[in-house]
Image 1 (cartoon, rainbow, N blue to C red):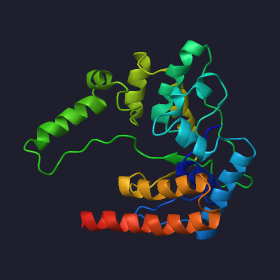
Image 2: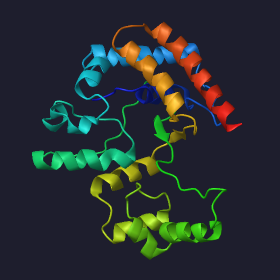
Image 3: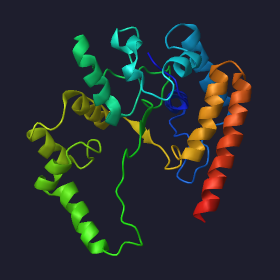
Length: 245
């Protein structure tokens, strides 16, 4: 199975603690010891052959998706952990091989307090305060999000809508592929945590990704990685807030 990012480590720690990595204000919910445990778990997964190393991912996949690698397409990598909105790309790439993608229950750590599923909006719409036509913009958003004709026109181009009424409209018109429906159904039936809006902001993402890469190629140990995640992420969140305020 392909675990290659800090989000995978977050999933494990979320199972153990029942908490998201960052709270609504961008504060880290995990202790240094808990983050260290997460990095140790990841290393164990690599050492036992359960997942490829971060070095392999960087050398083989780079910034692309594992869905396009020969190792995934020939069945050497038998599982991936990713956002539901991206599952259809994996399924599409597998079609020519005759293999089929499925959405099984996620493995649980011993004593897990939650399934570890991370929830967040994949794509958002907003109306700028500088808009010259906010009422018209609101009408357009209402049309594409709630009106049957608008829902069909938008389809799943921005992922599966969270509006259950819109989901039924799309399913009835056969606009939802099987793997997307499986993914959404799994999310709806699985207890997870909602991650902070700060989690994937570029500055914050860069902070924990750099540490994960450094750990993954053996430049630092788990103790150092935990300390660096805390210091770098805190600094990144502070930087973001200074620009907002």
